[in-house]
Image 1 (tube, helix red, strand yellow):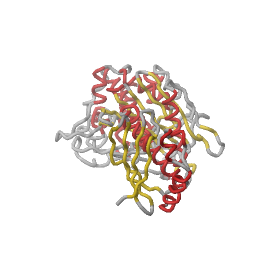
Image 2 (cartoon, helix red, strand yellow; image 1 turned 45 degrees about the vertical axis):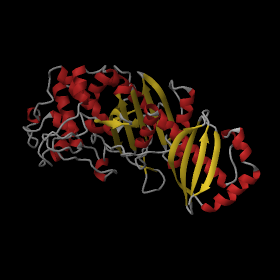
Image 3 (cartoon, one colour; image 1 turned 180 degrees about the vertical axis):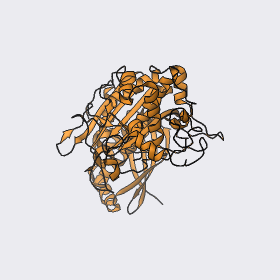
Image 4 (cartoon, one colour; image 1 turned 60 degrees about the horizontal axis):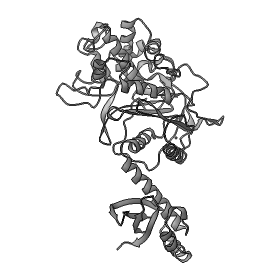
Length: 463
């Protein structure tokens, strides 16, 4: 199972995903998020989506949408637990850094110090493991549940089968995602700390941060969402879960979005690790030739909306997850879903980030959605007059609406609406669009007042 699903490059979605509100977002922001998230979840048929947003050191927004269990018609709530997959890796990396602070290990230790029997253990370092530059082959690259994974295993068995193979490349010369790395790292942590991984994380991270729901996915609770998949474009189907032992330090954790948000707050405030450890944690690892990897230690590093971003996604059978923080803006976004067949975690994250980091773009997207809706209404000879000024309402007489319907309805479905320009004139915003219908393309000539109402909405023939 691919436990790290990257954000689609340049992906934009007009709608985005959220049901039960907990947090402190202003009512207008709550309403907008609720509506967009609910619309998207319904449109794509995902059983449920749960979101938590952190802003300025507090939980800004939290809500859940849809059903945690379709068969029982059980709604997802903010207390529903989801598997977070490879987001677990950042907790393993943090635990390793805590042990380094105690002097019990070093990121530059060779693996041979702990497991000399592994392939070329005298050349691979802990840093190589945590940054996916070791060369150890991934034992779980598939994006679906294979039969072997339904049977129990142990970390030792995984290491014996995959970490004794020839390396896929020379240590430090390439970046290649491998869950095997984190199984080895987890076993090293247990060896140097004298504690098992989950109790260690509970003692040093979860309990101090009051992350009460965080724990082992193998231990199921009534609060857990049911896992679903999808075959091609079919409906959600219940899917099995991996047997005990398969994901260990690579992707074993379940929790609520709000509890993961508590980790994001602590991460942004540098409360668990020392400042030096956070620098190690978030610094991009370079290959031996100096080329960047866009990966630190269990964290992807990059930029979104012109703002430095630190993120990681996760996938296990039936679940997708995304956790993104923007340190410069003191913002964190958590998006969890209980279906692995529709990747909405990336677009939802991008849309929320756009609203928080690029308000002007968020306003533009709202305008685009309104224009799309109005144009579809005009094909049926109707408008929502509350959206228009008195002048525009005077323009849209019964005769005008009948002519709009008669001329636009034969064009068929509106397929693409593309904004062509934006300018200011007469104290208003002027927008022009090209609207591509099934049968023809038309131009839109629009003026919007400062209060958001439409003063002009003209459909013109394209020559």
